[in-house]
Structures are given as C-alpha cells and as structure tokens.
Image 1 (cartoon, one colour):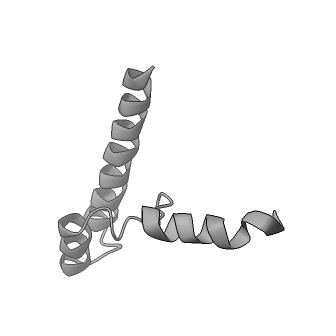
Image 2 (cartoon, helix red, strand yellow; image 1 turned 120 degrees about the vertical axis):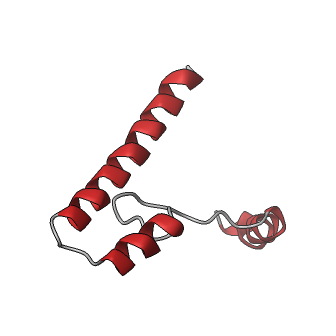
Length: 70
C-alpha cells in the first residue's frame, strides 16, 4: 500500500529534522550550519542515502553498450 510507504518516508524526514534540531540545541552545530542544513534539505541530510538517477537517454545508452556482455 502506498499510504504505508508515504507515512514511513514522512517519518524518516521528521526524524532527520528532529535530529539536526537537537544537535543545534545541544550546541553540537552552529546556527549557520543548522540554517545551511534546513535551507538545503535534503542535500545535506546525512542520515539517509540519496542517489541521483541517470537520464533515460544515458540509461538506454548504457544498456545498449553492455547488452551483449551481460
């Protein structure tokens, strides 16, 4: 069910925000670092793994190039 996945994703995001906010309140990170993190979320979020997906054109080219080798 999609609702379960959406809820899990929202929960992960809220936990990330809470973790960084707690680091700021505990003076583990500066106000500038906190602002940088929150203004650029999820770019600086190190609590999760993010990956960029190649374009369809690049993906097709890779598949074509290695099709006979797989």
